[in-house]
Length: 163
Image (cartoon, rainbow, N blue to C red):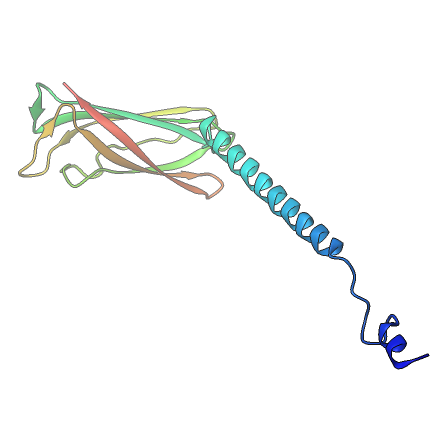
């Protein structure tokens, strides 16, 4: 065998060069994996959004409120808060915090209720010095609800003042 024949022999000058089919297959596989991951993330995101739109997280209570102001403005109003326990765990305590524009502390005293029960608290409230209550204004009332299990839920109730 001559020197030129040895140079042409497979494996003599290194491994035989293969076609690029495996590189193409690897690139296609990578594209399929990336698209599959994007679809999974998209479907997960759509599921979360749909869950939030259709009711979202189930809270263990429903809270609402209203404040009546005689006339359209005044120093005095009547604040009514309603809390309905929608779960099987009883409420052991409700602390109510009103904004600084209220002079009465606590602004409403709330009782306790068993599972599925409703608590209504009503109190005459007075505006802080230098401020008045105005019909049409939304006041933020914070309820700190403690359940018999020891868990605590803080709820921000938007209360509209009406005349």
